[in-house]
Image 1 (spheres, rainbow, N blue to C red):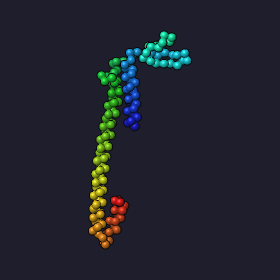
Image 2: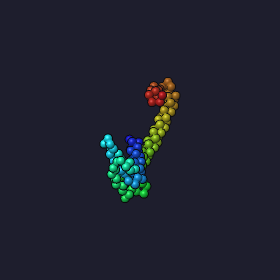
Image 3: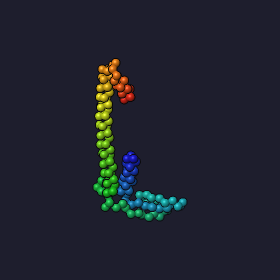
Image 4: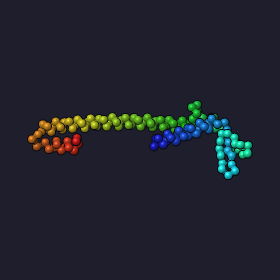
Length: 132
C-alpha cells in the first residue's frame, strides 16, 4: 500500500517539476481533432491557446506545493511508524523464541531426570508437541 502511495507521489512530483520548469503551456487541436498539450508552441500551421503558467505562490522553496509537502511528511511519518512497529515485533518475537527455547531445555532436563517415573510421558509429550 505504501509503495503505491510513494509511486503516485513520485509521479505527481515529476509532473509538477516538468510543469514548474515550463514557462507556458500550449494547447492545440490537430487535423484529426486530437487535442495536444506541450510546453513548446506548435508549428505555425496550428493555432495554439496559451494556458496560464503554474502559480509560483503555491510552490514552496523545495519546489513542492503545500499539499504535496504535507503528503510527503505523512508518508515519511508512516514509514517511521512502520519501522518502529516492525522493530518492536522482531524484539517481541525474539523474546518469545528465547522463552520457548528455555522451556524446551527445562523440559528436556526434566525428561532425563524422570526416566522410569510416572511423569516421564508428560515431559515426553510436551517435547514432542512443542520442541521437536
